[in-house]
Image (cartoon, rainbow, N blue to C red; front, side):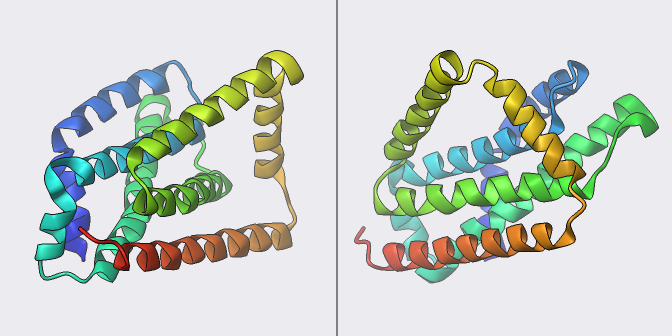
Length: 204
């Protein structure tokens, strides 16, 4: 299964240079590391999914000695590995650029993992049921809703989201964190099982 995960890294090894170059730029202009990691992780997964749709890749995958359960599971495990990799790159880069001033909060890491896991929990079942173009349509719809809210309903939406993030990072109630973690893990596992069921019934 880990060979399937490593495949995504090999396919995008040249793109990694672009990731690192733009990562340095974003860190220099002081973009939120939380936003950086979430966007990069989802972009990496979306690119990997696009390669799976090219040249009948799914037919090739199913001809290899892997079960469909392993193929889907590699994607869900890979999300956690790739997100952890981007966390290390981002916070490692911040430390090199800013030294001890660069904060490394476990709450920020939990927030990053939680946001990515929630997004993937909705993305992958849609991808396995339909096609990646539906993900693009869904993402475009979300951007449209965001811009509509920002321009018409909540002009200070960016500030509100920033304040919400800060409130999460300063929460002291441990039970809230455990409840959030438990809910996200259940959602992720449920999405994982749903994707396996969808993929096992799919004909190539």
